[in-house]
Amino acid sequence: MADFLNIDNVLNELDLKENMIGAEFGCGSAIFTVALSKKLRNGKVYALDIQKEKLSALRGKLAIENITNVYTILCDLEAPKGSTLISNMLDVVLIPNVLFQAENKYVIIEEAKRVLKSGGQILVIDWLKSDSLGPKENLFSPDQVKKIADELDLKLKKEFITGDYHYALLFTK
Image 1: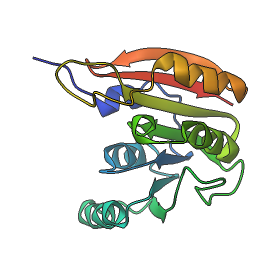
Image 2: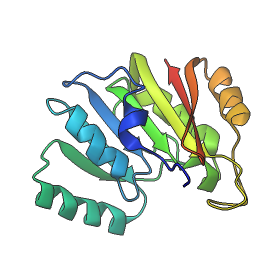
Image 3: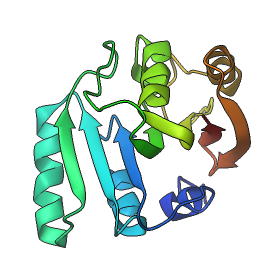
Image 4: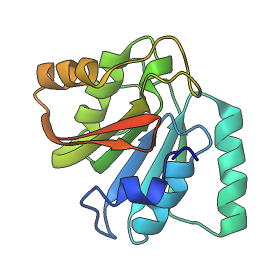
């Protein structure tokens, strides 16, 4: 049986403390947002997406699960300062399965760096090339992500495969 993406295993690779402030860029179904909110139970998590419907569905899920430390933001992460967050405010930024579908990947990673505190963590997760599952076009390789991160002076802390279909790169500012 294929090994898909185990969210808890991925988050365990990060250095997280309960009172941190984090964000999921391009939250979509927000599976990372919900899991992160439970790990940062004395902190805050911002869920950012360009689609109102995704954020509306997330708000409903948060109400059902009685999760009160998540804040939703409708925004365009491919625009300069698109997150609308203030600079140097976050401890961790997750960018899961976003870059393959974005036109301006550089701006998204640059924005993650801008809103991150010094020493903060950026976790990029994206699709590996696969014959069976996932997108077939516009894949963005780990080397392409590392090139952008290097240009932005982000330090690669860890690289790992997470399941059969995704890679993960953990950078620090």
